[in-house]
Length: 338
Image 1 (tube, rainbow, N blue to C red):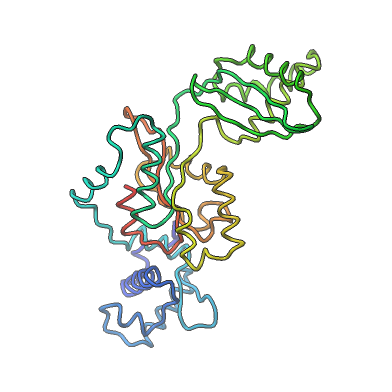
Image 2: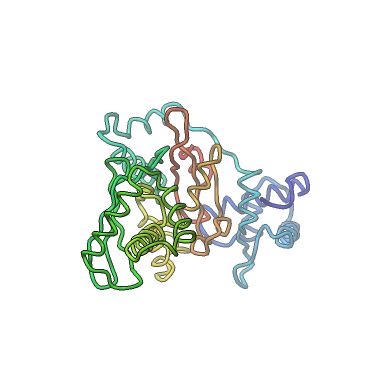
């Protein structure tokens, strides 16, 4: 949140900040005093506007990207704009009906509905749409199997809640034979089948700490392999998100750097960082917005996330939203996500 409240910033400065942010969102170019004098209804000279811009820069709301006379919003400037200056209009009833009509009314499974929602978010905002898979109130491990791939790698196959299947390739600390992996799977299934995933993870840590001295080698190997599975998978089996329209981000100059795009797409593929941010929204009400560095991940410093939780049976089970550049059209995106 911005340190200053709107009441501490002169009304003229608020009006100029609002106009500057709106103009920069529109064309992505640094905004100068002459442009602002045309964009606002303030009857002041360009020199006065320059003085106000200097004050806004000193307070950290805007910055000069280079020697140009123009200025661009900072994360702090965007935050003040969104929290206090943005004029958001709710969607009209007809627009809401159109959104509802664009989703499958008789989806055969939740995955079909989630994919459709992600595609819809991307299609109407021209950004990347993201929808998390619905979280189960309880994720029980039903079965785990291993398939040897190479000397130090194995494919772990986990069955969760009787029907969800998650595959995970793990790197092990030593070569394991197919027989050893089968023994490990037999031991883990006998010990943990039907147990909540979080409880499995906790017990693995506790047992390796407290009973290492009394374990035989097979038990220690099984628990070591299982720890690696849950560590490398990063999330509970069944967790994840569906992303659509990520190539839309290539259209924005601030995200079009090849190296930056590669890192961003790698983050989408690995999912861990994005899921960490989205999980924070599960416990929040209404629309949440992360601007640039507010996400806590450097790879998203030039991006904003606009998210909202979705519910079933009076409980929050997931999050949906869009990912785009910090200069996205918030007044349009926020009501769509909402």
